[in-house]
Length: 191
Image (cartoon, rainbow, N blue to C red):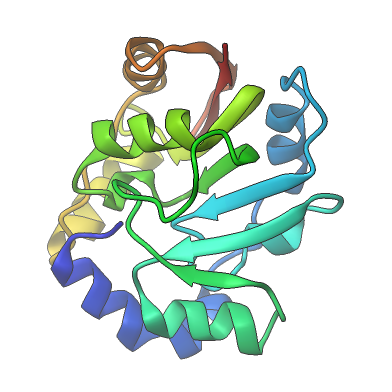
C-alpha cells in the first residue's frame, strides 16, 4: 500500500503515530458511507495502519488492511481490531465480499492507485461504497503537505478531488465529491 520506503518509515513511527496524528473525521466517513444503497455490515479499512480511522467508526465489522506490520500490530494490540497484512493493489479478499472500503489519509501513499481502485471495486458488493478521505494538493495546506512529505523521502502522489472522482468513474463506480477543503471526501458507489 505504501511505497517500500514509506512502509519502512511507517514501521519505524508506528509506536508514536497515534500520538502525532489527529483523530480521523468520523462524521465525514459516516457521511460517505451513507451513500451506500446496501447495509454496511462488513468494511475494510485499507491503508488503515494503526486503526485510527476504524476507531472513528461504529457499527460494521471492520478489518484493517495494511502492508506495514508495525502499524498492524498497533491496530491489533492497542485497538483490538482484526488486522490483515495486504497490499491495496492485491487485496486478500473474495469478490463482492464486503459492503464498504475506506481509505483514510493513505491513498497518496499507494504506488498503484488505479490498481487499488480496481481492487476495491472487485471486493465491494453491488450497492456498497468506496470512501476515500484525502488531502487536496491544490489547497494551500495541501501544497505544504506535499512539500513536507517529499522532503522526508515519502513517494506520495496526491490527487485533486475531481481527478480522484474521474478515476473512480473509470473503474465503474458512481463517484461523488462529498466535501472539499484541505481534507476532502470522494465516494464511489458500486453499481
